[in-house]
Image (cartoon, rainbow, N blue to C red; front, side):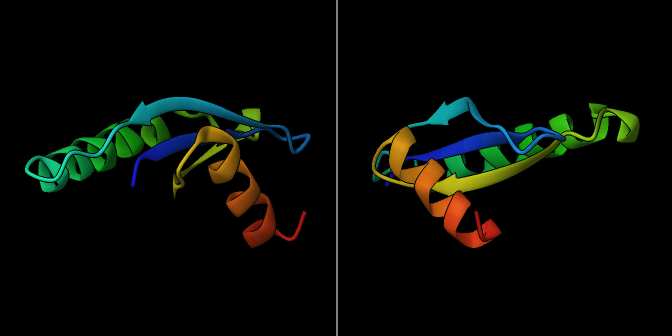
Length: 74
């Protein structure tokens, strides 16, 4: 299943910023790459901007956004 990095703004807007397609043989590498990118984004984010990031699985970007909205209670 593909996974996506989603940016959550201070106002609650959700935006898919990165997409990682998953391939059976490269799944572990791809997930590791996505985790590294997520750490990089989180380190670069300034607290005063009120932006944070999540790694979300989903068949499509829309499905990933729905899953994140549900987990955030929105």
